[in-house]
Length: 105
Image (tube, rainbow, N blue to C red):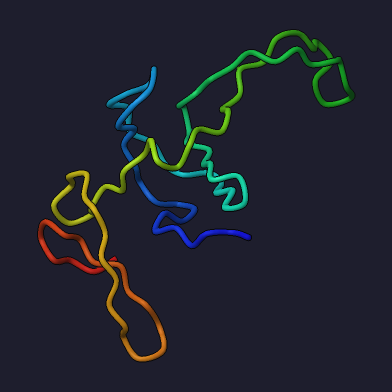
C-alpha cells in the first residue's frame, strides 16, 4: 500500500542527508510504493546505452537515480528555507502549510 507524502512532482526540495547533501533541485518523479523520489541533478549515475535511431553514438549517459524520500525536505516558496509541512482542510482540498512562515502551497 502506498503512503501519502507531502512531496509532489514539481516541488523544490533540498537533500538533507547522503552523498548529495545540501543540493537543491526540482522533483521529477515520486514513487510512493517504493518511498523514493527522483530529483533533477541529484543522485547521478552513469548508464551504458546502446545506439538507437535518435542517439547514433550510444555510450555512457548520466541519469538521475531515485533517492529515499526521507532524505529530502520541501523548500517553502515564500521564505525559501527547508521546512516541515502541516496540512489544513480548505473546503474539500487539503492545503500544505509551511511550519516556519505559515504560507500555503
